[in-house]
Length: 61
Image 1 (spheres, rainbow, N blue to C red):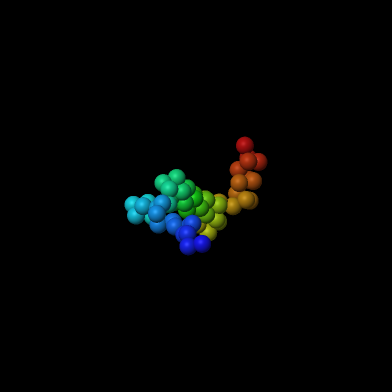
Image 2 (image 1 turned 90 degrees about the vertical axis):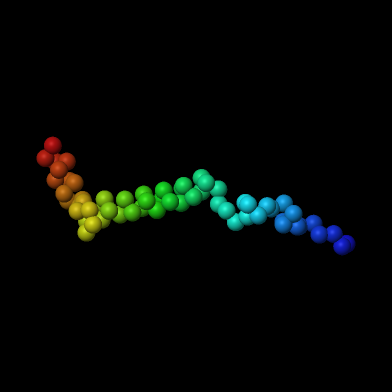
């Protein structure tokens, strides 16, 4: 059995080798941006949000 059954180089072109699909890259960078935004909004040291402050604002309404 001298056959080579798994020759990936035959099916993979150099233009598409080791490149991620555009949707995956958009999702990757979008999640990083969302994570930074989330940390800024809900971390008291960064954004100033606190549970006590949110409670007091909701009771005052």
